[in-house]
Image (tube, rainbow, N blue to C red; front, top):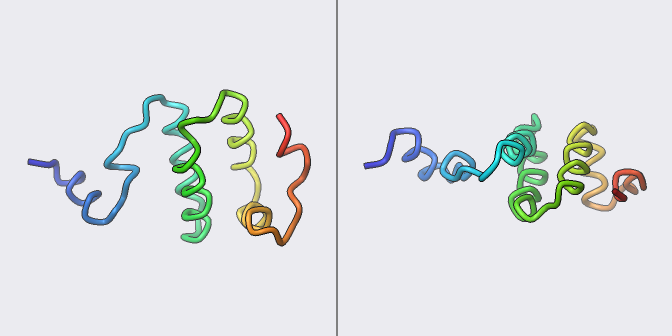
Length: 92
């Protein structure tokens, strides 16, 4: 039998509760990527993390962490191509 919160996570598709990442740093980045403040940013940034996060090197984790300090509107504009990302955020 599943714990009540695990059953809820499975029912709602809340994958971050149902699956635990292997290390503390990834769990912290996962939380920050999925709790941005707007549903759109959560989906875009969190989805990007879900797709790529576990394969990142230490340097790539630092870049992602730095990017999470930027405003959501800027990150989303860079992602959809309506604004050019600053070069410093693209190069380790």
